[in-house]
Length: 326
View 1 (tube, helix red, strand yellow):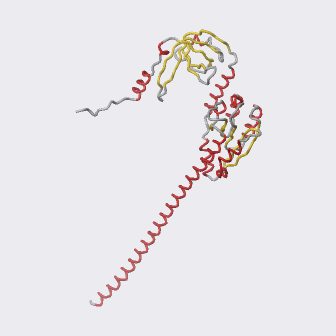
View 2 (cartoon, rainbow, N blue to C red; view 1 turned 30 degrees about the vertical axis):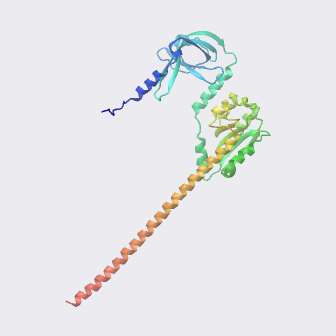
View 3 (cartoon, helix red, strand yellow; view 1 turned 135 degrees about the vertical axis):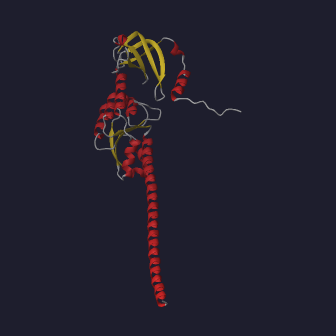
């Protein structure tokens, strides 16, 4: 008779199984890796430090484990070709961490023109440390409390996206107080000026622009850093779904297009209205139930009093009749 007993694993056992199953050829030999060295304020762990190598083209990085003596030869922001080997481990959350163990420096290509990439990395790290505001919660809370959401909308001079946003928003526009700010979105100073103007008593600052050429301006670290410093939540609705830039990476919410912005605002408003309507219907039902219970309670009390009086009168009559026969 077959057994119904099933294998039982612990989380550690399963993670080790998958870690060992993900085997690559590069993990078994000494290789070279090229990237921009980013020195972190890491702690000395038994003679080793954990820093990063950043890809010169893509916004990707890898942790690099460097011996204390070798680390003294590295300069922050310089591009290196480093010899070493890969290893991996599974952390407590179940993610597999890849680490490159440095053995030696093969070449130093200097700082070159990649300082901007280092700055982008620092800006992303700054946003990660500061945290992301919950735009959904900000909008829902205001609308639920029957308050208009104040939005500072930055868009381009002579832009045709505003009708797209308002048309997508539709009747839900009544929940929003949108202040428009048209600037030259191809000029860094104008964009920063717009962001500074929006850093006032608004709930949300939105920067919206259609697709096309000129989107590289939104990779400027100065603009991204200014957006991080905003007190209101910051939302981007830039370009098309395939576009990606630094400003979108540091936004509290990223929407793919200006039309998507209108649709999003409408969806939030409709969701809150639906939730409130259901809540009001439930409260109304509960109120009616309470009224019915109170009514039944009064009727029951009236009946008890009525029957009590009748019994009292009946008792008097019966008592009188008994006395007459004695």
